[in-house]
Structures are given as C-alpha cells and as structure tokens.
Image (cartoon, rainbow, N blue to C red):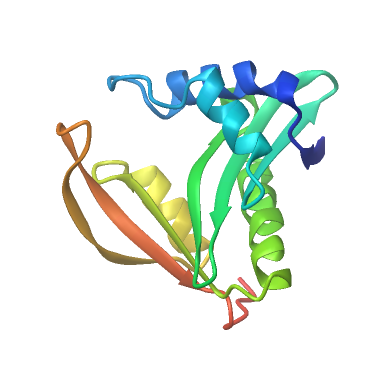
Length: 153
C-alpha cells in the first residue's frame, strides 16, 4: 500500500468513493470538480492510498492558521481493519504539526458509531453536536483533537 499526494486523475475515483461510502443517502456534494479543486488548493492536502493502481482510501484535510479540518476520510471495504485509516489520519496530522497547527476538527454523522469509535481510538474527543448539518437531514457529531498532546495508543 502506498500513500501519496493525490493527482488530478484521482479526483473522480475519490469523488465516487465519497459518494458511495460517506455521502450515501445524501445529495452528492464532493463531486469530481470539488475534489479536483481541493487537490489544487494550496491550503488543502488530498492524499490517496493505492493498492497498485486501485484506490484503497483517501483523506482530505484543509489547513488554516488556527486549526486543520478533516473534510473527508474513507477506506474501501476490502481494506478496512488493517490500519489504513489510521495511517491516512497520521499522515495528514503530521502535515498539520509541520505547519505549526495543533488542533484538528471534523464532523461525522451523529449516528455513525463506528466512525466515532475509530476517531476516539485515535485521540479525538466529542466537541458537540450540529443539528441538521448534513443537507438539513442529519445531525453531525463534531470532534476535535489536540495535536500538541502526543498519544501513544
């Protein structure tokens, strides 16, 4: 498995993975064009994990002066349970630390207990709930992590 910065050619496979694994049941917002714009954006890191030529997972994180925001993270079904999600998050967090950013924020569907448990295992904590966050249909659980405190989990 190789993790690297995403290329423009990765935009459509990433968008499709987002639609199928993250945005299911919601209007498709992370389209090919939006992902391609994120790849080009100087304050956003888009990374792709590949198993040969096949996209196994990806992450998109936006960086600002005060914090980083994990916009999307997905791992294909066949690749789950082997630490790839952790590797993707650690890669993006390392970029934040290098840039002097020590807080990461994210949102996930409030009912997604598996994702919440995944992030909690990585040191994230629940920071609140956002009503009707997803297309006015679903609430979000807001989470955050302080990167200045190193976790040895």
